Length: 479
Image 1: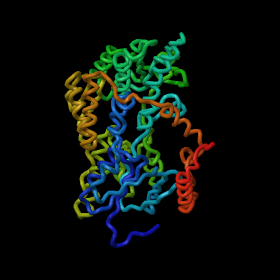
Image 2 (image 1 turned 120 degrees about the vertical axis):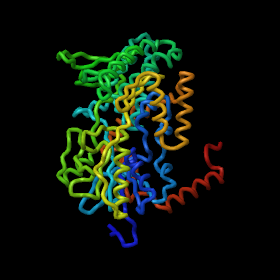
Image 3 (image 1 turned 90 degrees about the horizontal axis):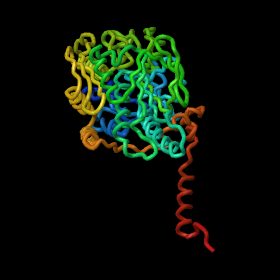
Image 4 (image 1 turned 30 degrees about the vertical axis):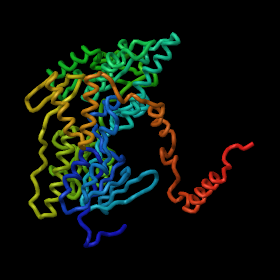
């Protein structure tokens, strides 16, 4: 690895292109540093609206602008695609990999904002039949599964076969994501699609929301939780609390109730919205520093968000175990901006900041059209006013003017016309993830190994031969 020369600027590596990674990078735009963003995707995902992609309201591009486009005017920022597989704290380097191509990127300061993935509480095999809600791939797969279930039900009903298992949709997890997903599927089945099919009545579809907890939306308090549960029931969602999922297969799932009773729910389409697990990079950092990890894989950090013994490394967002911080976007945004200020301040020889303090701007969850719940300080809101607040806040934080306008227009058309513009689905959306899992090297097996690319001479020869065949008119059959 090349060593840093005296002419190079301070090098900051940011891992992740989520809220923490993006806002941390943007906060360094005026600093005397060179920033390299290393992320496993080429886009910045506005995760709170993933459920709208899954249910056909928005397209993926409207909530996931290209990271390069977002940072294109920030001259001190470089974006690299790569899945970070290693962090060497001693040599201050990050190792990333994309399709078998390995890259080592050195840093002087490091911001780790790799976020969290779906947790199946030790039952990762559930994911084959119940996708989570953490990525564009998840949302597109669920879109294919949801709309595909209606299409298959129409075919089977036309043949006189039972379709109850196809028209039963189960959402596991009664947090904000689960509530929003269940409410939207109910609206989809009971309103949007009610006139689109001939052999099935979509209004008879069952939408079930399961959770082992005793209430819906626990972080919102008992009053708003009860209001949300009543509202969900009113729009046709069956809320089943105190119900723990103990088995999942292709055609359904098994649930254990509080009294120990076990029962089975036949449902082809399941959505997993329960639990999160911090990035495995937390374990890599813990092994090198001795920092503790909690059950969700979050790493203990100093009050200034740095790793013990490594003041040059900041960890932010869902990866952090500090002061019971919630796993929400604002924690990641504020933490990354704090880290950026600290890095810039050190270079300017400023005094260190006080420890990181999170300012809670409130929490929101939408239930259906014109209905949501919100907490802002001691204020508790529900219904239309909360929905307007939810709409304004989410549109404000969508990155980029173009994305804000298109999302607003799509949302307006959907509200007025009760129609969905993003209903195109394919079999590839549903099965591609599992097909890739069956390959030992995943997607790497589908591309050439490093060093085995075709030579320029081979490519030029092939192009010349293609042109010769066309010019000579010798393609096809000539009798």
